[in-house]
Amino acid sequence: MNFLDKIDAFCREHHISASRFEREAGLAKGLISNWRYKGRYPSYASQMKVAAYMNISVADLMREIPEDAVVIHQDEPDIVRESAVRYIPVLAGLPGDDPIEPDMILKHIPALPETLESADNCFAMKVPDSSMVPEYCAGDIIIVLRCPEPDSGDIVVASVPGDDPVIIRKLIRKKDGIILQPFNRHFDAVCFRSDEIDMYPVVFSGKVIGLFRDIKSSSESVTE
Image (cartoon, rainbow, N blue to C red; front, side):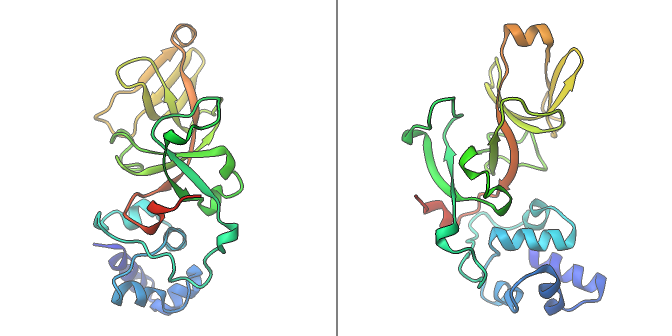
């Protein structure tokens, strides 16, 4: 079942037409037909509109798209003007306190609407493993807001001692320490007592605020 099948099922369940779906979801008229008959896939902006209207996550909406799908951004008349677009660097490693070195940057991706204002304080990286499935899959690109002191409940990118020095986990703060909790039950939680944190520093690079699913698209070749 692909994203069009999900839209069709939603329309049947709620007894609405595709044109009404487009209108109420904030899509351009005829866009669903373009996706259906021209073999195109929705831009991330459209994915968010559709997912929000259907009250599901973007990941759930788009999960079964083949890996070689091409995202067409030019099919929408309300696309953000180029002069307003900001770009976020996708890094090969974690940034330190110093400015990002050019050789750390793999490519750039356009800032998502919810991250546009904070784009200068964000970086992106590929999810290294499946520890946060189903929310984040290995190979997905996550948008990370730099934040050295994230709150309990945040999904964080952290550097920790051990065999896997860079991990993505849900942060749970306890009175006597912290837990870095995976979503995938096949991965172990990483726990530190307060005294261990002093001995073996845990460095938070930031908290995850967005997902850019890494299907092949024109954005892969974008540079500043």
